[in-house]
Amino acid sequence: MPHVLTIAKRELSSLFFSPVAYVVLGLFGFGTALLFLAGFGPGAPAEMRNLQWSVLWLMIPLVPAISMRLISEEFRSGTIEPLMTLPISDTQVVLGKWLGAMGFFLTLMVPIAILVAVLGSNANPDFGPILVGMLGLLMVGGLYLAIGTFASATTQSQIIAFLLTTAMVLAFSPLAVLLARAGWVADRPWIKQGLFYINVFGQFDDFAKGIIDLGRVVFFISGTGLFLFFATLTLQSRRWR
Amino acid sequence: MNLLLPAMTLGMPNLDPGGVVSQTSRTRNGLDNMDDVPGVQRRSGVFRMIQADQLVKWFGPTRAVGGLSFSIPKGQVVGFLGPNGAGKSTTLRMLTGYLPPTSGSASIAGHNVLTESEAARATIGYLPESTPLYPEMRVYEYLDYRGKLLSMTRSDRVRRSAEVCDRCGLTHIRRRLIGQLSKGNRQRVGLAQALLHEPAVLFLDEPTAGLDPNQIKHFRELLGELREKHTILLSSHILTEIEKTVDRVLILKEGELVADGTTDELCGKVLGGPRVLLDVQAEAHAVHSALAGISGVREIEVTAHDGWCHAEVAPAGNQDLTDDLTKKLADKGLKVREATRRKPNLEDYYLQLFREPKDTANRATA
Image 1 (tube, each protein chain N blue to C red):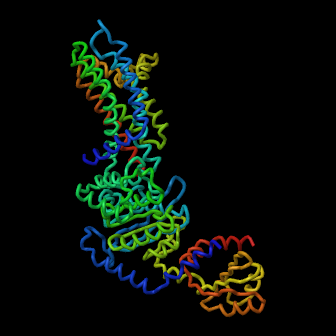
Image 2: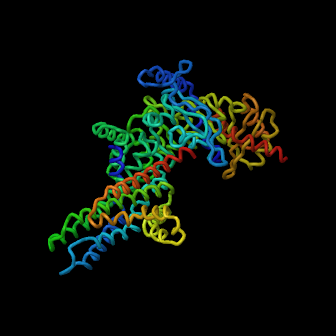
Image 3: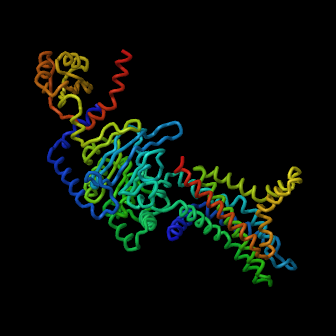
């Protein structure tokens, strides 16, 4: 575990070293503030559901931008070689990378937390559903970043990693819903159910409503674990080639 | 001229028999102190720190390394030579556990690099080719990061970081960003991280690439200090550097080991004896035709510069041709400025090794 934290810390500070990080942070903060203000005024419901759904959509291009360089950059620059010849395991490397990216994602949530405080000082919202919604966003972020870590381990090109992650993230939400409604799955209920199950937006819905369903939590944690496992396998696969 | 100059100027010091004796005794001292290294294999009383058994590596249809076997005892400094694409870096990557061999096995300090990978990796320090580093980190941050991943305690990290910075000449730039350092300084950072945990075995892939002559000299001095504590396998293109610093040379050709021995042993295999070097005031073809007829001459290389020719003559046997050559040139009325003898060096052996197929091909086309 100390090794995982060491790698995570380096990853996080390396993310913050790039000016892109501050641009992303600024744009995200500005965008969420605008979205918040759009639904903020006398008589409007004191809740964050709409904003959280908007953030969920924003995450589709945003999270792949955070995760694209995680491992691909190590391959491109060759730093993977001194890293992998240290007495540490591939799993520790993958976990450290993911955790570092999660650290950056948590920073992105700070502007939303500020907006929650603004809402709290102007109205009397029910904080329970808002916090559960935030937990849901973290769960989705964790899963998307795990997908991004996996994609980043497959290539040394950040662009390919970005596109691959975006494609997979899309497949896990809007595409899954579209496919589930297509005609050819109408007489195949198990495919339909499967597609609805992997739909991240559907899984997030309960969190947005303020409900913590153990099944949903298990979905996100196991999904995250599965993609981190795939990332580890991809990293290990160079040993079989 | 390019071909001959390094051989002329840098070949001689290595032939000092005293140097060879002291190297041998140093190796022996290293072997006597093996009790502190657990799990090190013995074979016929020799402790093998690096052991490669029939290492083979294929990249798709291309064979990079084919059936490579060698063992290196503790305390030995071994130079890895060969042209580009000979499989040097691939072999180092297999020994450091970065790449798995297609077949065969390797062990470091008795730990199999595949089955006991982490234990093997804990005993090595590795400077990969082209020294990949994180440009956004400062030198001391990077060393501390590596130290943490090597499970060093905080006090060890502070102490060793200061020691390796001092040793590698990084103390004054330890707060600088790695991305802002010159190639030579980055190379030093790479070396410092490899030395950080005082590993029993050091793998250095092209450690002097990008260094200026002064830095190369410092590196050689550093290597002289390191050989007391470490077993070192270093690859290089610079033959003179290898010749001056190593106890033993391994030469790879197309993934196979074609030579293994001390510098003296390999130099002894160079065809013919000491070469004669001549500086003659004449056209190149005149010098060549004057010398070609002399019996006992195996090979002549002539390079012209500013009306003077530099001729290097290799004898067929061990005889001294100096008198015959100078007499013949004088008879032809050519002015000789200098005539010296040079014992064969590693470069002669290397060229002999890699020129043979070409000569055969030339003969075949002729």
